[in-house]
Image (cartoon, one colour):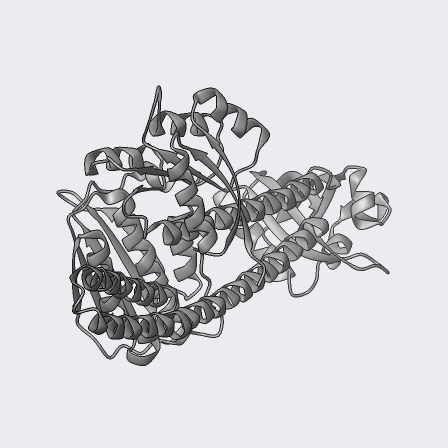
Length: 498
């Protein structure tokens, strides 16, 4: 397998610490290219001449700091994961760093979270880049559509219509010649020829719109199809303002536009969006398969190796009982192996929880909540009223991923002490509710240009035919309510955004 290239910028004055961090990354399978800086000037130079995938910064440097480095990166509007790593950082300082924009913080003597955190932030950075590219493509398509609309040929007209439905064309501009491709003299006067060009299935809609707008003296805005003699069908948009001439007659002044190109562009855009959705669904399926493969390798291969190491250590420790110093060291190593086995199991469960397949959504949520509590120290109370909820596999995965994302947001932003989770079935819907007692979400948070996590959650559940509602709760905290149908229709497919 090709090793992933990782360009790392180290803001670190201790060369030994920098070497330790790089060694961790290389052991995790990354091909690392790095540069170490320790002054503001060197940092600016590195940001100017290089493109970086990750920035790892010490908190305190001589005459410099991790927060100051973060501010310099933000001032350049560089979207790159920024981690603060320090040997002396308290919880308050770490929270301040996270609020300032750092993606994570770690202690130098506890780097077990480094690799999972780096992989997570790299995935999120990649998703942000892909999402921005998709947005730019959509904007480009819409810009082309706007250019077409600005050049649509139109025709000014004036006509009168009696309550009996008879129409007389009083005036047509030269643009009508290009629109109808019929000499103007043949259209002015009796409007039967012009109306005869409207398709039979669209004519009742036009008559109804004219009658209704005439009664209310409201602006007419009608779209329909005409068949040009000897030519193809065209779409036209008719906009006109009514004026009552007498009790039986209404005069209409307006413009007719050829919107055939616009209609075709709309169809192309819809087809493009459908293809993009299909591609996204395929990518999500591939991503889930890759996660399952990695989780299987971690569980079966790495887990097996660790268990084998533990057994060998146990045998070695038994032979070193007569040597207290070496025996104690063997026991410490065995403890580290136990911790590695636990971490490997947790990572495998987060990548692809086997419990989701074997025991269902409720059991998977309870298991992940327990892992979350152990990892973050936050109390996580789970109340599952219905343990036998049966969802389609893609729906269960999507709901579980939203749950993972929600707890990640709580850990990163909420400053909460407790999280309450409720899972139940209401009629034909699955209801998942996650409430924290943190600082609460603000309305401005939803409109942040980089709030891809919240948008991804909504899109993921919308693909199931469901919805996600995120709101601040009184007196403080945030609540996420997910609703999704138990039985998925064929029109919806699972779509995940990391």
